[in-house]
Image 1 (cartoon, rainbow, N blue to C red):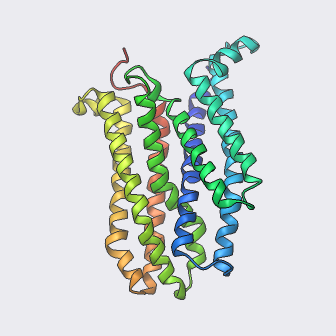
Image 2: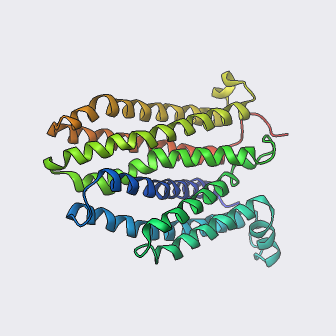
Image 3: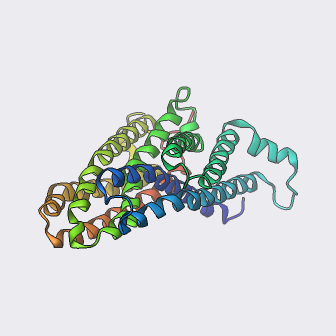
Amino acid sequence: MSGALPLLFPVVRGLIAATLLILIGIPVAAALVRRHGPRPALPARETMDGWFERLPGLLAWFLLICSLLRGALQLLSFADPGVPIDTDLVRAVLLEGSWGTAWMVQSGVAFLLLAMAWLWRREPRRLTIVMVVLLVIAAAAEGSLGHGADEVWPGVLGRAVHAVHLIGSGLWLGTLAILALVVFPSLRREESLPQLAAIVRGFSYPARIGAFLVVGSGTTATWRYSEGDLLGLPGAVWGQLLLLKLLAVCGIMALGWWNWRRITPSLTAGTPAAATSLRRAIAAELLLGAVALALTAWLIGSPLPLPVE
């Protein structure tokens, strides 16, 4: 294997995961705007709706490109240096086995999302249901492209646990990213504070559900991979990465609690400085989220703390 491949794999994995998280967050953020945001036809609402129409197609393009790049990297990892890649190798790596099946499913979902984006402006609400179904399928496929497919799990349990972890992250951090990039910049004026406060309060529900799914699935996976030997985690690279990720997640949860208990009441009261505090806290949350995502990408490719039988 080329020396660059071990470095490229986690980068591509991280980009795919980040794209899926943001895609999952789009329908959640759009629902919050419809319920708590500006009325249709207002300039701020038109700006948000324009982004909600364009982003699925742009992200689907990026997801498809990254998925194809992942397939190419996987193929190169099995190819012998100086030996041409033949159809038998392509079939064995990309078209057969659990990894190949999951890769084809995820690539197919990316293509369908891209095709669906052309129709998004005509039927956004109806296509939202289709988009959610496709994203659940993509998350399930992603769960089959890492340790979720290892033999330490009975049946499809590992794939399900990792898919739930990804979906929970999307509900939580993916939605937060969309709100920070699309919604909050359109609600900067002082007269928009009530709408901003309502959206932030509404976001607390998917955020809590997402955090619960992340913590529950993460705890399940950690217990399974360590076989209950949690004290032995610092002795393995996988465990060290996991502990760093746990610190990042705890930081995100602490900032989220601060937003909920301190900043959101100030927004509701109409305090102008609260909006600035909110933007700073969310920027810190997303920065820690990016760190956690990068660590997850390395975790997926790292050996488990105990040998797989």
